[in-house]
Length: 291
Image (cartoon, rainbow, N blue to C red; front, side, top):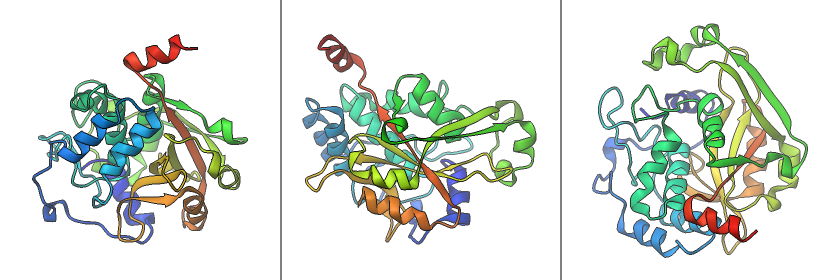
């Protein structure tokens, strides 16, 4: 039951697409990095980060889209901590980042855990909410940098969330988390309006993480409904993501096409937030020393 809010959003506002039941999928690769993904990650180790992300994610293309495919392996959400046979948009992004940032792919689990959890993995410590948990933690912990302002004049979207907000939000009942552990405070994002995003589509740096951000709705503590990554390809930068578009799955779309497409969504899209991954460890040290 990974990210139940995505299940709710898909049912309420999702576009055309297909979803595959996890029970209908082949199971051999669950929890184990497939040989071709392992080989791609290791072969790409000397390359710049955007190229490593492209290589790793290329090896994961063609997987089915499944809502909420990952969990903690037991307890409330017994789905596996890691799997490579199916993804939703966030688990795909997390796995590509983990495999690309790790010094060796066998250490990807540590990075995945650092992105996904506040402490040891558990349902209660999982960062379920993008605006209040996942994004601010990824920035504060040095994994990502907000580069939205490099592409135009972003609008700051902000909203106060407190216990009353959660109590009035219908899907709250789907999260068996004590009230005191539900995140409160200001949720805020820098959002590049869609017209500016479309104009800047060809300039979005490869390796960037792109969040699709909807307009605020009263009483709803969610804006982000999709996340993907921009990767360099022979055809130019592409939006690579786990999506329900078309037949669904992990696939590529032209970045400009995607941004133009989301203009038609029923829950109006406010724009996009652009986050850029940072190099870590010895690679980062080498970069700093060369400046």
